[in-house]
Image (cartoon, rainbow, N blue to C red):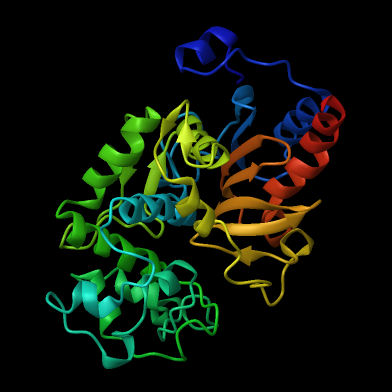
Length: 348
């Protein structure tokens, strides 16, 4: 379905703009099944909504994934939302990029000696050096992020791990990096991550309903992969990034802090990328993909829960769905490149 102009006005967006042929063609292709299981497609340009379109969900998929027009799991795109929470925490003086794990956790947890000097910045860029196996070729029950989810205290488990290599030297993707930064916020702010996010990020964006996965017995929200949002609210996250930390005239994050988060602290992070992921870099829990003289800013989660921001084209794209086939990975980039950019470039 496509929301009407009245519906968009009620949501606080500027007037619904006419869809151009590229987006209309993409919607037709999605409905025909050419792009796998897509649940939602939202596109805005310069703060104006171009389309908010939802598609049928396969009824055999788990209910936890969510519904196309309702709360929907964003999987590892949660890490990028967490990045914004960390930026806000830094702006509020709770810690700096150079604050170490020992400085934050030593009074609360036993920490492996290898980990004590790791600074926050290396968690954010997935270059912490912790011996963490998440993308390893191992049985699922031997992967650290799976084992961690069965622990009563996620952070205690993480801080007992040794180092595999020196901090700042290698990219190694992990959920625990995001969880450790969330725990740092909880300790320094003396409030739950849920409350911190509600007060300092969601309410200023006009986001009124979210759902956090919480399995950890200490009540820590799973900031690695456990957030459910409405797709239109996911788009607001992108609008905040496009606004360089401001949303509808309200400064939420300092521009300089957000700029640090969007720098490529790691480059060419995929060993065997598909064509769309060639040259992919990583900032502070944000993916960065070179394209026509800029770095596209991306949040990407399992099943293609994706957000794309282009400063050059003043465009934000959101997709939700459940696609795990390699041919669909990072297809939001193809949607942007082949169906949105060419026409909008002509309009400029």
